[in-house]
Amino acid sequence: MNSKLLIAAFFLMIACSSTTFAQDSSASQKKIAISGFADFYYSKNFSTPDSRTNKFRNFDIAENQFTLGLAELTFQQAAAPVGFRIDADFGAVNDIVQTGNGGTSNILQQAYLTTVVPVGNGLTVDIGKFVTHMGYEVIEAKDNANYSRSLLFAWAIPYFHVGARVSYPVLSNLTLTAHLVNGWNNIVDNNSKKSFGLTANYALSSSTSIIVNVMDGNEQPDTLSFGKKDVYDIVVTHQLSENVALGLNFDYGDERLSNGLATWKGEALYGKYTISPKSAIALRAEMFSDPNGYATGVAQDLNEVTATYEYKFAEQLLVRAEFRHDFSNQTVFDKKSTLNAEKNQDTIVIGTIITF
Image (cartoon, rainbow, N blue to C red; front, side):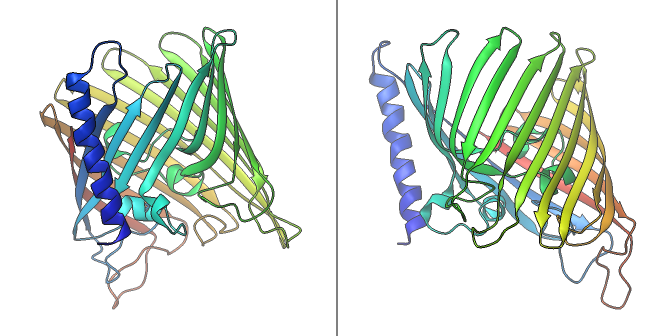
């Protein structure tokens, strides 16, 4: 039995024992909350590329194939005053998120201890591996309005960090968080320098919030004299009405390379209309500029428009049907081998999400 199967069996045993514990414990004992989900998708690219891939996507890459996107099992205990969270992930999405990280720890999307220090309004400290604080969207498809992820999510920001973060509610509507981490998407740092992050989460009103995120660090080996990397991320959300939610995401990043400063930037607009408790429509439009080819590997202006319809067949079963149009100012999208590459790509995706 390989190490991944052993870890999976270990978490399964924890789930069984924790469930029993929760049923038999008294109210004074702490309980471990257990949840999870699995998402599957089928994608069709109208250009029928021989590569069988959707270009410049990060998760819904496989074309004309049924694919397990992500299966996740979460164990969480609230800090009182000490708690923890563990997310065990399996599937194609996790393989992409953990690219370059070997060993069994790449199964853990998150694994951190958390405690609340009784200072002022309460200082929350997390230590371990956790998802990034940046971006409008998240890794889990179930928690996004669209099934596919944005260009900004794919190319502008990191997925996760290993280190520590400290959060404090300065005001009733303003929370500040500081992050000290190894770097971008790496379990073991590739240099002796640490990266620093900062988040300011401000509730402008009961319906509008503004989040400003910053990352600063060096992501190149110590042997190189360059590599300073900075990213600025702004997220604005607004609940226009009971049924209409709007969002805005802006990113700017740069890294000092041997041949000068490489930059990338983009903006995305989001809208979701809840038709009924069972159905909703979500729209996304975005532009991503990669003038040096740093992020995507091609110097280009990359854009996309996405329309998603979702229907909840049951409380634990959600299905999304999505059409996406990607287009660039360069001929970068795959076609059949007998044809030239082209500047646009049209796809449909059917995603099925099961939660428990």
